[in-house]
Image (cartoon, rainbow, N blue to C red; front, side):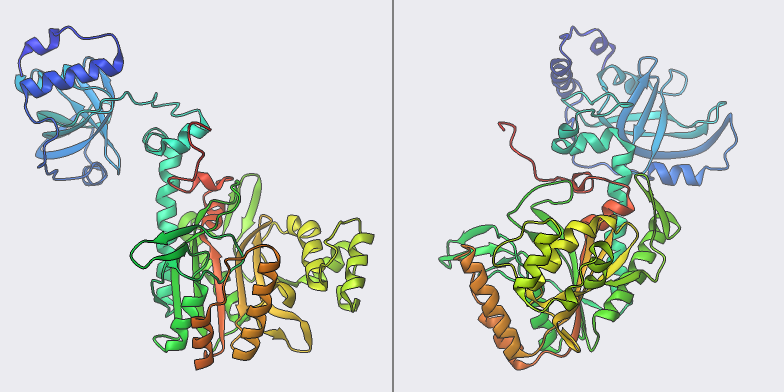
Amino acid sequence: MTEKTETATLSSDATEVRAQKLKLLREQVGDVYPAHFHRTITNAELAAKYEGLEPDTETQDVVTVAGRVYSSRNSGMFMDIHDASAKIQIFSHKDTTPQEARALLPMIDIGDIIGVTGVVRRTKRGELTINAQKIIMLTKSLLPMPEKWHGLSDIELRYRKRHLDIMTNEESKLRFQQRSKIVSGIRRFMENDGFMEVETPMLQSVYGGATAEPFKTHHNTLKLDMYLRIAPELFLKRTLVSGLTDKVFEINRNFRNEGVSTRHNPEFTMMECYWAYADYEDMMDLVERMFAELAMSVHGSTEFTFVDKQISFKGPFRRVPMPDAVKDATGIDFLAIKTDEEARAATKAAGFEIEKDATWGECLAFIFEEKVESTLIQPAHVTHFPKDISPFAKEVPGEPRLVERFETYCNAWELGNAFSELNDPEEQRKRMVEQLEQAHARGEKEKQLDEEFLDAIDQGMPPAGGLGIGVDRLIMLLTNSPSIRDIILFPARRSKAD
């Protein structure tokens, strides 16, 4: 490249300027997007290696680094380039940098990705710097970057253009690095606890394992309507039946064709596991150990801040039966109520409207949601759920209306759901048929009985504890993120036309 490039007449439009520079670069340099380039060290590795280098000291070490240009000063004499790990300052001066390399400087814009080979030094001000000997354009950016220090102020634009959000917002970048760390931590915890990870179908001809509206698609070759899974439960239980392992888990994506909110996304991540010869109390212990370990890995402590609250993941968590929680909040003793009619009357007397055919258990759960959930700020296990709303859990001994189920709450959010799993094949079929009839009565005509699952249960499933953890909500808490869209890399959004 020659000095003539510097005096080329360019448009005043920023995007057009970049396009014109690209054209000039192709003419002067040739390949502006080379296929082969190898750096010798990352920026973070460089900083660690030369941490003890004194100010105003130059080494004889030649390194090759690469990154995106985030700032340029004195006509490119000083540039900061960032890779995924850190930033490094680049110094290009006539005393140290050949003319061929300096001739490229006018063609470099903020946002371009460049490679630099040079000598490592530390400036008088203490800035680790590379004296450039060679500069190569690796990627010419055709769009201007948002202003670095303010990033994207439009929240919706941040979600739509997540690449720019992360590029210009260190908090967003850290949040997704922490997300990766948390998911890896869950996997490591489960494996260290003896669980085997498996993968089960995301496309299912019969959907089940939870109550939710599915996404529907069609398989052309099989000529079969299929559904994106709403839960992996039934396949994981079939795995337990097989004897492949006594402790199975899956970190899975689920899809539910329902509402979108600060806590709900149509596709979301869960960790679901099943543990043979264990029960729901074993699962409570597992949750407490996992949550404490994850908090320690992210914060170095089991205590952390979420918005304006101090949260403690130090176990043991409080354990409270749902009927007791409702009685404490409202004075209504559901265990003393014998019939559905009495339960509906008590609910109405407390000032709540309830469906005319609501059952005893549905009334209990409804009042719990209205009066208790919002008070559960510190982590707590709510136990003894009504059997009416828990078709896959074993009954509480001595109280057939309740089952051995718990949900873990924190910040008034449900984070986990666990059962002592039902493995009586006749009772399982009975409850699933009842659930199917209720679904059809609600208008869910496509819902079917999963006969393959029932066939597997007929073969014999060992007694087991089962657990599902809402990974996204857990990450929200651990990263101080009030909206689920802040911790999902590319969240669901309406189209621009809407």
